Image 1 (tube, protein in one colour):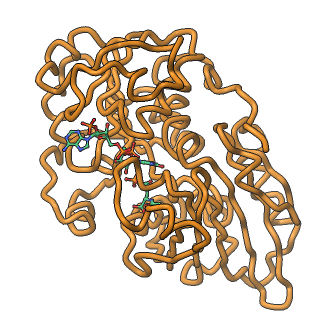
Image 2 (cartoon, rainbow, N blue to C red):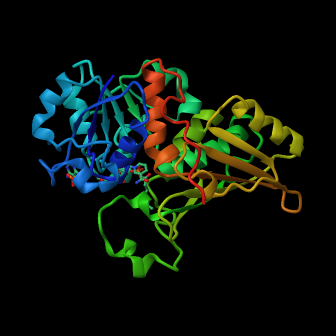
Length: 344
Ligand SMILES: NC(=O)C1=CN([C@@H]2O[C@H](COP(=O)(O)OP(=O)(O)OC[C@H]3O[C@@H](n4cnc5c(N)ncnc54)[C@H](OP(=O)(O)O)[C@@H]3O)[C@@H](O)[C@H]2O)C=CC1
Ligand SMILES: CC(=O)N[C@@H](CCC(=O)OP(=O)(O)O)C(=O)O
């Protein structure tokens, strides 16, 4: 399977390369960069010495890239993938976009939250949260890989929403992300003296992942779900911990909650159920495609509290993208994704 990565110099592009180095069916054809065209990838990322030494091409070569690839991963800031997706549409190449351009069924929602016009509104993209949309991913030409906060938060709440166990107006998502979640570009917020020994909430009541989480939960619930979502930046390079709160409906017992998690995820390799009372930790998922889930019932307040841990660059981005690649090409879903987490 001939694979090209558009935007190979960013953190998710790099992470795709790291994972695909252990993928027996993937042949890397082209890697792109607009700012470092011509440089070799192992000069930008020396940890790839002995693994990759391709020179980077750029988007001026798109026709050649498409002709020589079976699948394009697009790992660019939002706004660019839809231009590329539109250009390559109908040319027989599959697209897996790691950004936000194809994530919304209603492009008006995208335009409202991302504040740019959508140029490919008629695309038939499938939302690639693999465990929930696997059957649609199988035959998709364009997969919209979910965001990192959204992957952790939707997986956390899906069993409760799907089985109508919680008050849909009571959902609160409190999530923390390592700094690689913001990409490799430099800015003051992510500068070491600003971020180190600091924890900070941001974009309260306005983060662009809010409508993405609401879209998936509303589909599962069969009615409109509105959530409160607060993201935080914490001083580590990788990892997301998402802690989700909701009021249990009257009569819902702890064992009904347990059953909902086991029924939805009991057979899912990449979802590790730590059970009722479990405490997921980012370090246990670091470098892996696992999502660890633990849930707690607070009988005093009537709330259920569910915690998820993922690696934002793996299950939150490149790992899930490779999981989707495997599903789209009929490969065993774990191919290339079986490395144990990196610890400590
Ligand atoms: N980081 C994360 O944890 C996650 C990120 N995502 C999403 O994945 C996508 C990539 O993120 P990430 O890898 O972190 O980002 P980075 O900022 O690390 O990398 C961005 C990439 O895009 C390229 N690029 C930047 N500006 C342009 C432009 N104007 N035109 C063409 N190429 C450009 C850069 O290449 P160059 O400058 O060399 O041309 C680089 O390869 C984003 O949409 C992001 O939101 C999704 C889930 C998690
Ligand atoms: C720490 C940090 O800055 N995180 C990013 C989310 C990363 C991500 O998942 O972005 P996409 O939706 O584009 O895929 C943010 O808050 O915007």
